[in-house]
Amino acid sequence: MRAIIEQAKNEIATSVNSSLVLANWHIGHRINQEILKNERAEYGEEIIYKTSRALTLEYGRGYGLTNLFNMVKFSTIFPDLKILQTLSGQLSWSHFVELLYLDNPTKRDFYIEMARLERWSVRTLKDKIDSMTFERTCIAKQPEEAIKRELQNLRDENKLTPDMVFRDPYTLDFLNLRDPYTEREFENAILQSMEKFLLELGSDFAFLARQKRITIDGQDYYIDLYFFHRRLRCPIIIELKLGKFKAADKGQVELYLRWIEKYELQAGENPPIGIILCSEKTSEHVELLQLEKSGIRVAQFLTALPSKDVFQRELHKSIQMAREKISLQKVAKIDFP
Image 1 (tube, helix red, strand yellow):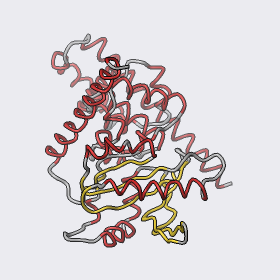
Image 2 (cartoon, rainbow, N blue to C red):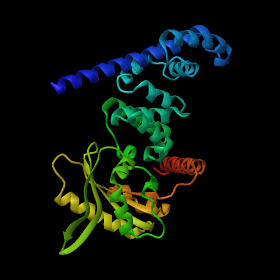
Image 3 (cartoon, rainbow, N blue to C red):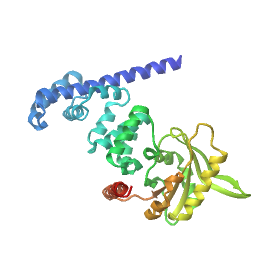
């Protein structure tokens, strides 16, 4: 009986939320079409102010001047009512308000799809935007057309790709580590803050083991952190490295991956993926070793964050460089097929 009641409550809440989102869209659309006539908001500000006052007197909170302007912006940014009708059952008005002021439509689409898929709360969405999750996700380094294609696949099939899951860098300032520290201290700090670490990794990561022992030719090896990703349906290992990434790290992680593939992989699961989490990447090493062919990714971790402006500049610079490199590789393939 409790389950029936809870289900009914959830269905009512979803229905009310959907109606509110669509009503706000219609209000914004009508203001834009009939009062502003698609001109800048300042021209109709006095009329909107009077409208806001009248609606607030009659219906209470929710129709203040700022919210009415949000509704206008909402109807402009989301002109397709059919798409909105689908999203309105999954995202609340508060979600949409957080999304309204993102400057890049592709970035906005990313947050919409991930919030929908992973059922982010409004607070989680805000935290993801503030921590620049999109800019740190590997997909952001792809050309614009590739990002749109992957987002469309996600929209149509709820299908995640590794580029939409993995990030670089990972921000681990919550560990409160003080230099100098050892790899064991680093690992222990992660284990003590596992809930926050999982939030930084992203949803659908399930923690399986630490220092997982495997034996090859009578010799014991230990995998630092062992996870399983539900949507990617594959085991994931994370090796922690203080200092720069080294070529020898590839051989170590590749050995672990092949062992898991041989002895642990279950029917229906995808090949395992390895993440080498290091304090400094060596970009040319990563490029020359062609790590992704072996199912390996290298990412930097940050235990102390720079200012938001500096961090944003560095991420945008990294994205631009990665896209230019992809563009040059395409040109090279055309010139030398």
